Length: 465
Image 1 (cartoon, helix red, strand yellow):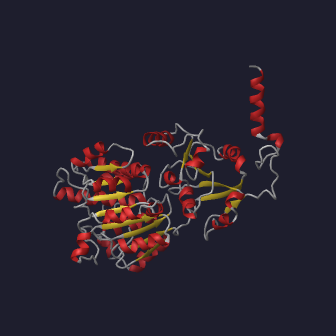
Image 2 (tube, one colour):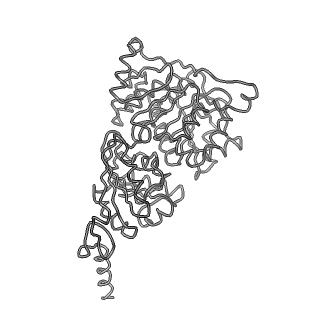
């Protein structure tokens, strides 16, 4: 496992997982391994590793307090999802874990609920003093995802406090926010911290944060962090730990880089795979449209009507792609405050369309999204899986439309038809389709061209001036 310099110098190695006080209910422990395998088979859970804890089909049997059960009910969460059925008992048992699940599978609760329980147990045993903590650390690739995760933790901690349990504090450490503000929370002692790699590294190097008592580390969207070049930072962060910690690694895809990283970072991990690594959710109908570059905007406006807004994300591949869509409410090149406002406005239904880059669109959860439009083709299939994972979440169905043309080549589209996927609907290329003579767009002739009509209307309105 990845170790601190001190551990290496003393030759300390960790061969056994961390021990916790949590035990599965007696009646579940007494059940046969064959029964556990039947449950896993029923929910399509693939699991690897030694000494695998049993799957548990209800939150009550996972021994969560009444306040958390009520909070889940309020959010409309009645039963655990497949990744939660196997993942939560695994983490509560103290095991290191690799969780592979398509986006929208409920994996955030898999690592947030156990860390709340561990911190509650620590606080009851000996209250956290000033400047102490964090005990649990969650690292996310983007500020938006970190903010969202922090919001989930705060929600359940508030409910526990209302039930008379000790207050738990969670710090949010992300770029674009004042360090002074973040340090104010940390000074009082924090049980949990949600951070982005850059800001966390900065605070650790300046000795403003200490990981001396941290025993729980979750890396969310680990594949994305390594793609973004944070692997070195994460390895450095590992060296700040003072003792053995429980490490959890979550990812929708499982490239070779991640597999190698996991081997060096985890102790006897249990790998839980729900819904095939690197495959898109089966609840998303995927459509591919052949659209000339100059006709994309017209096509986009047509696409925004099916299904109608709100709840649509247009994922543009980078700042250049997003700038082409600058007239739409977009945060690709906004500062942190504007980005936060844009997300809130979209979430509250005040805006119909949100334009996001690959980084920003990853991991965000807007339950109402029915349609994701890929304005341009992502460079890697992993990014495509993450983009379209904004829709078809939590058992709902959604549509993903991707624009392709000669610039992105035809071979990529063939990769979309992964085994066992929902059928990909590929629109005919120009050889079979008759394009508009004015704008080059497909699906209409020059007589019905919306671009030509808009231009003529503008000219007519200018005559009278």
